[in-house]
Image (cartoon, rainbow, N blue to C red; front, side, top):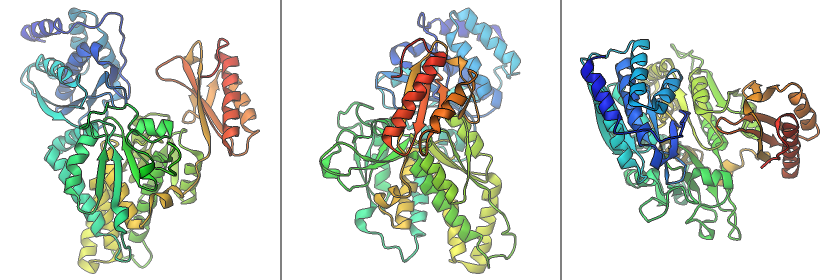
Length: 562
């Protein structure tokens, strides 16, 4: 490393001293904390992003958001060149960098990384970093800190894209590295035109009731609400009413948003008895999660929740139907013998009724440990992989080889049987691949896909919600002395240690009809999480409490479940 580069880093890092007594850890959400203590971390993530860009010789992104956290929090995460999350190999380096106590320590960590990763650090190579932020008041000054970090590396350029949803930035990084137009208007154009294609391909027999092309969306008083106001004006076949758009003085994530609605199962602020029977949806604070709901009666604030499991089921049903049409008997000409491998990926937190339903459809269902990176990685192993968490975060991945085959098949069908059912199915699948954000879960693109499929099926939200009945469930947390004493296997459904605990859980679970229960250590605090399901709510509660007591016996210090 050249002398000028070292002195620039020492000088600029002294302007952003780390907060005393604070240790931050890079997780799925990047670094997240109270915004008042994040400036130093964000500055250093700017450095990290520049190094990542130099290493990969590609464009990298930095997003400043704390998603569904309260408005006084903020966070920062890196978007890798693929449009996905930062490579896990770099997470320990992120931790070291952000927690370095002095400019000198920081410099030696950077030197070590440059050597280990063989990063071209001669000032000749350039690095480009796209920056985005959500609507939090703290975002602007944190963005400036990121710019300082980036510009302290020779050859690194920061491109400020302003206020964006997290999925928009992921999409833009992916597009930029593919040599495509990576602007917000290009994003809106792609998802709105793909939606129009799907609507144009609705079978003639399906009469869309004009009342049924209306959806009321809770924007969580965040960036998603703001962007939805732009998107809704580009759509002719869907009427979107946006509430909690952030423009009417409401507080971000305060009694609003997908996280609140999914966990509390009550209406968000601004919804109530006037909305009985309407199709409603909720985005989270940075618009990477989506859940639907309906208000059942005007006597309570309770809702009928349509969560990520149901969204997954709708997508899987539609895609399977299109694949069936495409590969139907009597359609054997040419090279159409591609047997697409369709797979669904869930975590152990997915409701057992949803897994049963998907298996009854004849779908292959795979489980992974909790966390988007595990789900995404597994879904990428299929020709078409669909993953969702119950919280409403998920997407559909199409393999390059399948899309190449699909393009060729569509062109072939256009020549021999244009307008046939087979060709329409091929066009629908191509449209889905362009509408869905394959980089990451995206509430805006998922909302449009749900709406297109509901119009295609001519289904109300109630018909959709009746695909299956969720099994009652209960989640508890048990404080423990040391959460690392619990080691799990089999996608976190079986506890290997402490010895004997799994046998005790199995014995307890066997007492309940349709009982299912597992424990897993929290990733962030010294608690063990308990998840239980059974045929009635009373039974699910009882099973969860019994297993919480077992956890306490094996691992606790006399404290009980919360």
